[in-house]
Every structure is written in structure tokens, then in C-alpha cells.
Image (cartoon, rainbow, N blue to C red; front, side, top):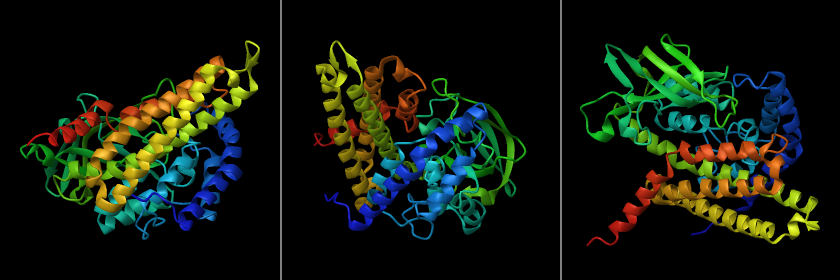
Length: 403
């Protein structure tokens, strides 16, 4: 295993860090004021985001997540991983500013790999240009969607069309005024075997029968772009909107989640690093019981433990990224499952220690910790609950003891 970065990769990291220092961090208070001005409306994209996107493109920091040089920067998963971490230090701004924000990243990867040329021209190109945004509609409120075989939404053939009927939620990004298309996962072949029942279909959000019911908040936060509950009520789209082959939805979902989990995990590490900075600075500034917080034994323990956990998590993710590059996502599935458990657990622990160090300030909006915690805790569920991934790891380990 070789995690050493080439000079090319290090140059990307230096340029990304410079963009954060010179453009993103100074833009954070502007972003906040612009969102306050629109009452935190999740449908609105503040002007500062568009300005940052222009600057990111000028610096060549655009679509860095796509390894295919036809569509993206041509970086390997391992080369992109530290860039995702850097953007994670400002998760509300930096990923979108570089056109590397979920769920668009995963959706673009799907369309690039499985889409037809017509689909790429209609949807991938404007997504790559940052002109539109997209949603991913898989999770459903009426079934346990951590088991994707439970998906109940129907995608039924009718002549040259598909008719889509079902209710989805946590369709992140669909509240945005700029969200124009959703990738919907539904059942096309109910009598097929468990893993070939579902398909993925591109659905324009302005198609008749698409109803965005509500925005689902997260720990009281209405995140920009939102997390929509959507009713697909007899929505009709042409069969040419099918992604890949009929019955390949489960396989496409797994392909999407491999690199996507690397991206999520590295952004979580960036979030933990941001919380770590806040905690350490505050510990040096504040005094209690006659000395600086940083001199209190329990605070020193939290700082040391946080650094240890961050470094452990980073190495696990870099190993998983290296494996995806060398043997593919399928060959790295256990390592991917492991980081999905370990990294959110680490991030929530570190952020929580930061909150405890700051006390009342930690749960306020005066510091980023409360919002970071809500984001990190949500990601602990977003890619599937820990219990599902731990089961995968345990099964692999137990097979080694079966003769």
C-alpha cells in the first residue's frame, strides 16, 4: 500500500488550500448574511456562491471528483480524497463552489458511467457546468430503505413510456430552485430476483405528477437545497430516460456509493478538523479555575484523543481510496463499509468534545460546531445505518473461519 502523494497531487492540495484561505473562509460571513436576508430559504442560492464558483473555475478547481478526464479533473480517488477533506472544513460553501457537492457528484458519476449520449448532453453537461442541480430519490418513508430491496416505488412500462408511482423522502437538493432533475429508483420487475427488481430513471422535476410535498429539516436546520419529500403520482417519462439496463438499479446504486462514501468520509474528516481548530483556539483563550482550559487535564485528554481518532480515520479512508483505485469498489467493499462506521463516529465524537469545551457557545450559531454536529450525525445515517455496514464486515470476517 502506497499512500504517498505525487507532486501533482500536492499541487492540487496547495491550490485548494489557497482557495479556502483566500476566498472561502472570508466568504463565510457574507454567505451567512445573505442567507439571513432570505430568511434561510433553502430554495435560494446566495450570490456569493456564484461568485465563488467563478473564482474556483478561474483557478482550475472544478469537477475534481470525476476521474474520467473527459468530464472531470482526471484525478484518482486517492488524489481527490484530501481535496474533499479540505472542502469539508466549510461544508456549506466549498463543495458547491467547486461543483463537488452531493448529491450532484454521485448523480454525475452515474450519468457519466451509465447514461446514454443523449442523457449526457441533456443532463450531465449542464450539471458539469454548474448551471443546474439534481436530486437522488431512493429512500422512502413507508419502508426500511436501508434495505434497498424494500423499495416500493413502481416504474411500470406503458408503450414507449415509464409511469412512476411512489413516495420518496430525503431527496436532498430537490428544494432548490435550480434543481431540475431527479434520479428515481423504483421497481420495474417485481417478479425478478431480489437484486434485479429495481431500475433508475431520470425524471425532470417539472414533469406532470411530480409534487414536492415538503422540506424535511435536520435537527431543526433547514439546509440549503433541502431534503424533500416527493410524491411521484403517475409521472410519465420516455423509456429513453432509463439509466443503464432495466433491473440494474441495485448494481448502479452500489457503484454510486463506493466513491461517494470516500467523498463523504473525507469531508467529515475536514469537518472534524474544523471543530478541532475551534476547540483548541477556545481552550487557549478561556480560563477556568485559575488556569487556561488548555491546561486542564480533561481538555488535554480530549485534544489528544481527537487528534488520534482523526489520524486513524484518515488512514482508513486513504486505504479504502487506494483500494478503489487498484482493485475497484467491489474489491474494497469491506473497507468502504468500515469507514462508513468509523468516520462519522469519529467526527461526531470530536465535534461533541468541541461543543463541550465551548459550553453554551458550542450549541449556539455563533460558532459552527452545532451545525457541524447536525451535519455529521445525519451522515451517520445517510449512506446506511452503521448496523448494516457492521453486518457486512462481520460476515466477511466469519467466512474466514468456515471450512
